[in-house]
Image (cartoon, rainbow, N blue to C red; front, top):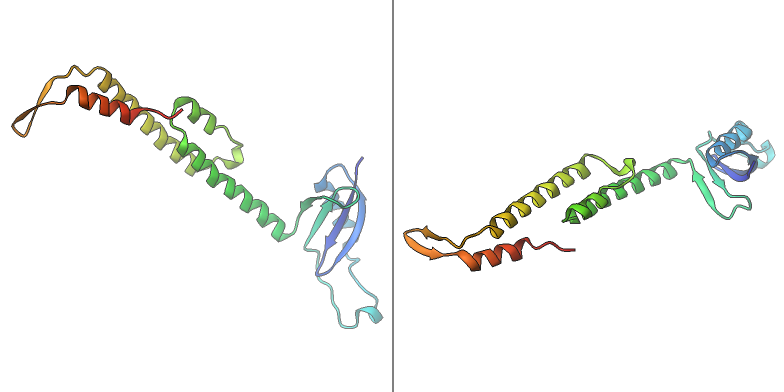
Length: 171
């Protein structure tokens, strides 16, 4: 079983080594091992009072890489990173403009899929459907004359070319 180097954080901190299967188990073990041990002798502490445990930092053996931070700031940092990824997923989905790119853009971890990403996906789907409908109309255009405000206007070829250029998809 791996050995983890941990620092249990009070209002001060104390290092402790524990043997555990995961960083999460190491954090629990370290906190239990030092619970209530956060004290100094009366002569050393003078008027210093230590408080309750506020979290644990778990490091790889040797202490060179932090694996887990159970303090409030560590928890908030993880939540912030998740929200950042949720926001980024909306941008990635919004930039998808073909069926294939839309399918790939929507492949994500469930933790990053929220209502906003689904809303953006629905808007992209509507845009793709509209573009496909416009392409169908433009391809079947027969060049008929239309009467616009009393004037006969030939909008056949030039409008068809304009519509097709507007609906051209990016690779």
